[in-house]
Image 1 (cartoon, rainbow, N blue to C red):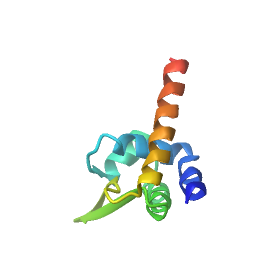
Image 2: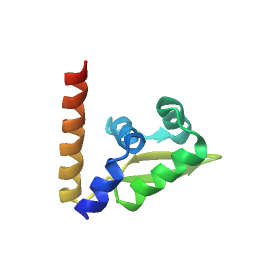
Image 3: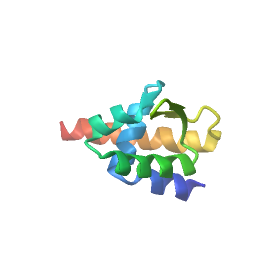
Image 4: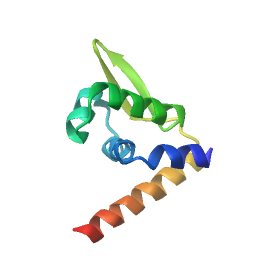
Amino acid sequence: MPVAILSALAEPTRLGAVQILADGGEHCVCELMKRLDATQSRMSRHMQMLKQAGLVVDRRDAQWVRYRLNPAMQPSARAILDAVLAAAKDEERKAA
């Protein structure tokens, strides 16, 4: 499981999506596309990988899909996610 989670988070667009979802809210794929400058098909592929890793769940809303972090995420997976998000935040601060 740790390898699948780390592999899913290793791609910048997927990491960016998880960073957006880390606010605890539910976000439409259209918002993720806009904020991450990704096409619909590309964003869907990225979100599918995050979903397969158990990091996100989705909900269909008319023609859009809304995503949020998986509330039933295993504690060990959540610990990995939290560590990756903290490291990414540190990197952003150093770059600024």
